[in-house]
Length: 254
Length: 135
Image (cartoon, rainbow over all chains, first blue to last red; front, side):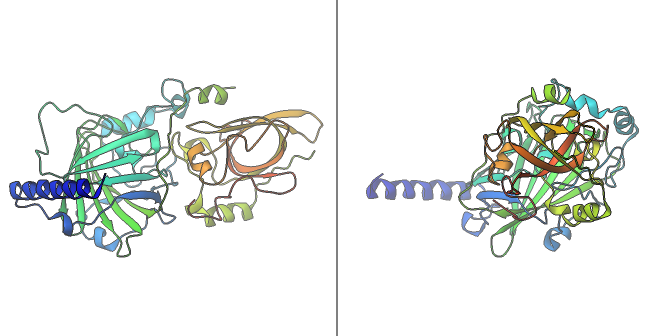
């Protein structure tokens, strides 16, 4: 693109942004918003508390403390209280079933995938944020344009339907329409009624992305859980293909 | 060739000290499948190295103290994670002598989760997890 073309594109972009702002007077201007764009690796202190986000959590929320590499053993759920249906399913769960051709590449939902130890990559624009997860090649779309948070006819998927808004320097994302999947990778599943609230905040130096991910599921959980998640910015890297190969389990079975 | 299996307080202490630097787990539950309170080291000869998600797999033969051979398999992290630590699809070849450190399967089978691999001359394969926070 030559200089004249670039100038015209910038002018058009500015005009579109201005139109959007006029139609949504409550929206924070793009210039004021933090930009989360970039490649983020899970931090060494992946589950450390960010005090600014901690004070935003509803009272009574239990911290699960299994962010990143940490995982719970059988029938341990980090303070989550299970409904009778969830507890019965967890008791019946056998780890061997996860090592079958049918299930070994079963895609988790964002409830497990985001806190997992794989990196993420964010592309942020005025009205939209795209988050690519290396884990299982997942891509999240987060609408920032103030659209209906509960549209009719939206299918349930592993990434769900996400809308976000800024509260100061914190991006608050609410996700619904999730498809059933694991919460803790040890037999506890969430239902399609799971509602996830995430808060994202950049550190002052922009090198760390802090987040909390809260879970409400009236079908499977009696209380509300949260994971703290921290990522470190890495320049020049991108998410790689995951391309899960289920034949892995054939080796395990030998 | 010697086979050495260690389960020691020192190893457990080391594991705990590296709690935030544990290899990338996920997929099937580490805590459910492997014993995080034990660490073993196995020496053997590589038969096959598979570099694929959700986990890579090192198949190797171990000569036991009684002279018999036993087949072992060590499950690795996701290849994309290993690539960022210097591993490649051909990092291990059939015939390579290696020493694999990791966590044993809870079911007592000859299956383990890899933490690190060194060659016969002591050179590490890739960058060990405890020495580099990022790439």
